Amino acid sequence: MTTRVMLISPATGSALRAARFDDGSPLDEAGVRDARAAAGALPRADLAVTAPAPRCRQTAAALGLDGAEPVSALRDLETGRWRGRSLDEVMAAEPEAVAAWLADPDAAPHGGESVTALTDRVGAWLDGRAEDGGRVLAVVEPAVVRAALVHALGLPAAAFWRLDVSPLSLTELSGRAGRWNLRCGRPLAPAEPKAGTE
Image (cartoon, rainbow, N blue to C red):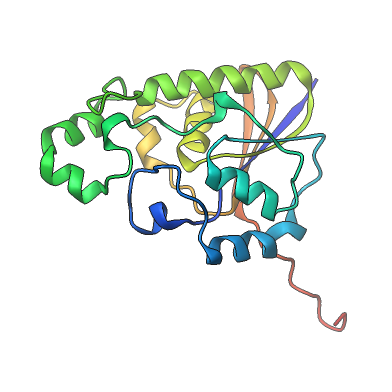
């Protein structure tokens, strides 16, 4: 049975704009506006879920996915004591810790979760969806999209940091546990009207 898992990264908020480790801050007005504008570009789904973070839940609501259920397994990478701090602040205070974190997927110098642990958690959720079949739409943080790709494609964990995920982009995985195919991220934007149809 084929499953399609469609991962949507949330719209921007203040933490993303400030290059800060997320602290649960909500979307800003521009993010809400962008998500509402993208609502018409959503693919059909049998089930809609969201990460529990305010930014993801608000994006889901702005996209018209009011019934999207929060799923704990899809929460963002837990960054422990770095939560709410900017990357520049952390690099200035703990350069060796940041270097270790970026070089070693098993490292968690912030006291939170390692990239490996995140990938295992998200991978378990993804493989569980493969058992169900159908089309699942999930609004999740960029780190969760990267973890899903590392797991689904059997990439080395170090590839996690080499995957860029833009706000309000759609990344599709189809297949089943152990054999996933990737349709790379595309922006969620309203379709351009065809000439002569305005």
